[in-house]
Length: 109
Image: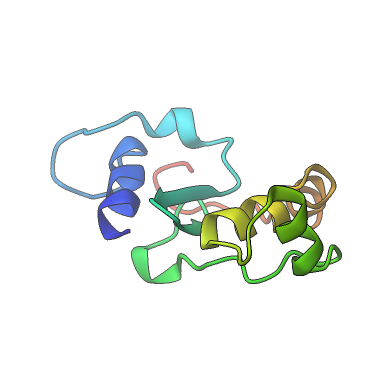
């Protein structure tokens, strides 16, 4: 997961390596980014450091048992929970609309 997060930070030119590694302007419109490695998934904001990425913990308002039944598994992986919970269209729009804060964060971001 650390490599996935570092790769996202490299794409956005946020690793302060002394030389440009990516194009941060392409990430300015991103409210969050998702790091996925096999069955594990972590979500963080565009400018989050590694320690601020976290797993999405719930599929609410849909019961987790119903989500499991709908995709034919006994238990959900971290990735499946994130997709069913946070990335469900209505919830995703709610997150972007009500839980996104824009502010100056240095270098004109």
